Image: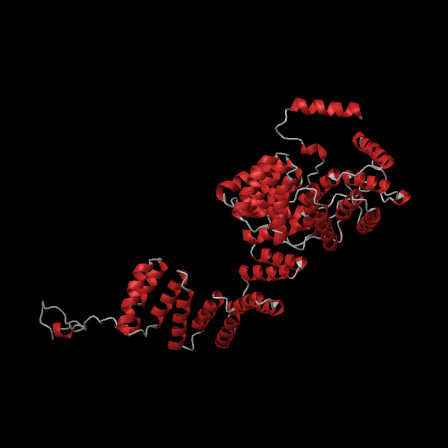
Length: 536
């Protein structure tokens, strides 16, 4: 019994000094992983110099057996562009840990970057055996098959990747394969699904808008490009595409305003200066157009469309030697386009090299099966050389093409071309087989009709300036529409080769009056026009 005044005994006895628990020491990491945390920290902070020092110390301690250190060292080599060295290190990782699919994926990635696509496919297949539900392996297999041009296998693997996990990049590659196969409609369907999955991806919205722009569906193109600019107002591709649409419809000043915004963010963009140059061409400021196009050519010397446009502007300015130079260069890069040979033949005709012009026209006729301007210009050349039989043959070929265009849809024919065709038909005494009626839209066309009757009565040599004017108009609007005309029909886009997404598509009509120098005073131009009217 406790004594009175004494404290009650505690039910829990106090521990003595010797019985107190000591703090436990953290378990030591294995020597192979001792610095892994430090290596990872330096790598994600992009402090690659400190990371290399930590990797070197770790490999020295482990005698090169630390898998993670070797792996990060290989990643750094790849970032520095040392692909072969990174491949060797990733192969070392796969030897240290052969059951890790990530090591095999990195080996295959390095082989892919070295252009060894078949070897990469073999390694990816080995990695797929270790992890069959990895979407990245399926995606990369599709990429390898795409570069090998095995498009069916590529599409199968990309679709498998989408079934495992949907990603924007997979949609982009699948749409690209459809475009490479010429299946624009299927590509649009793929990009539609991609936009539904990721509605804020500006790259997808811009690509879909550009595809609609190429098809001439301007409403949907404008809608998707507008959405892209809503999410990213500085998206230069979308701005360029929107400016190209305005440029196509003749709003050159508004298009130039758009291009001015792009010039601040992407001053070295070749499509930008190409489009600016063709805007000035549409405004008949030819010197400024040549200056901008030459800058675009300096930035992209192998782009045939810039060379095409340079040749076009020089033809308009009657600088035929320069036009020949640029058109010849464009043909070297795009030898399957008939219209280039036609414009080259026009330049050669004006350089008084009729024999080579004839050869160029023959090549253009062989390549271009739908543009009647080629046959019309060729008929003019043959008539001026005295070959009426050949000219008549080309005239009939032109009539067949025009009839085919009429059957496909109601087209609007350019009065310039109608006028020249009537002159050729009258000179060749085709008579009532003409496919057009005389245009009576304005007094200018009446004057040309009177001039055509005069030339047919005296059988003077036909000039190619008016045909050249329409040829340049068609060339400037290549890939958009051809303005050929039997009344008030709807202009229909012709078949065209794949083109750059940001290529300008103008329809500026040029004639003999447009070759007047832009520096000529306005009063002198008015006096010349008055004198022409009085003489007529």
